[in-house]
Image 1 (cartoon, rainbow, N blue to C red):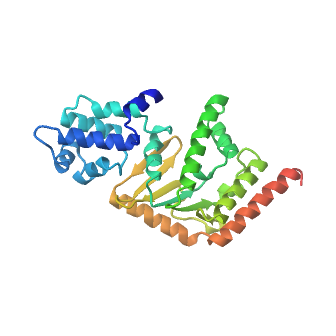
Image 2: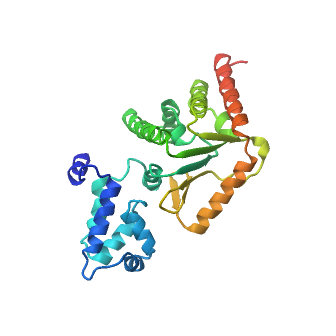
Image 3: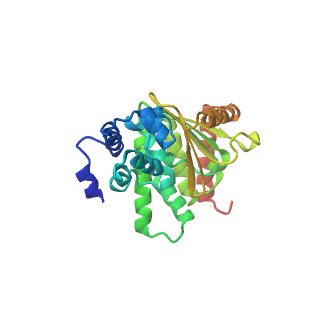
Length: 286
């Protein structure tokens, strides 16, 4: 499949960019020519959304591609591109959100239970994957960890993207893998903070009930496209681009920022938790 993708992609074009150019080509070559607005009406989205797809500002979803193929009588061109291009190495429910990260101006995420994927160390990620599915083979684990580390390196290296993470205190306390893995993981987060790659805040247990008790939320903003939100539960996720829903998510995140510790106090708590894990590792009976 990788070789097929290399054959079909023009030099210098990403899968998203190629899809965008093909969508524009088949739309403009339709007889009679169909505008973005008309195509939007025919496929139950806005003309502006079609424009976002044609500039690669939005990642195509399979069901919409199928509707566009039907509206333009392409014979299934766009649907086949999904299979040929393999838009992502990530699970279907997350791949569209992952594809947006590279173009985001800001990424703001809250994690209630585990360290966000882009902040994870290889050992922590392996423990998370193994905990979710204990029967995975070493080869499967290696592939999953590799994909996560590639994503982590790409996002944390985005110098033009402002990164902001809020962690529940449970993320610092839960022992994932081992005490040693936890200590290394928390010191990795502290290192990213000290290198000024991101802002991290912690919501302590004493904060009580707050606006995002139910789990993970990620907000992304863009220069030339509306903001989006992504929420996730066990083996399922949802990408939100409805203006009203995204606005509610943004307000919830702002409320959470208000009850979280300051960045300075959060860093101190992260380092303190790392030290506690190290002490517990050295003195397991203490």
